[in-house]
Length: 89
Image (tube, rainbow, N blue to C red; front, side, top):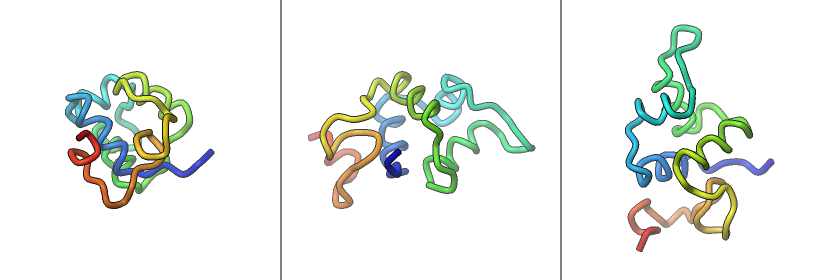
């Protein structure tokens, strides 16, 4: 499976209009090993932890974003020069 650009995970959540807490709840990311679910989602979005394939599928569904479309607007790649808002225009 290709590496996931972590910044695209945050972009997808934010453009879906979800807070970290709401997204963690909808994705079923709960507290584990003393770490809150929202903190675990932030770890995914910061690239500290690689998301699993099932997590990516849930994100794609909840955020209403395709896993793969073209090479510039999917959950695996995003141009380095783009910001979340610039990619939407």
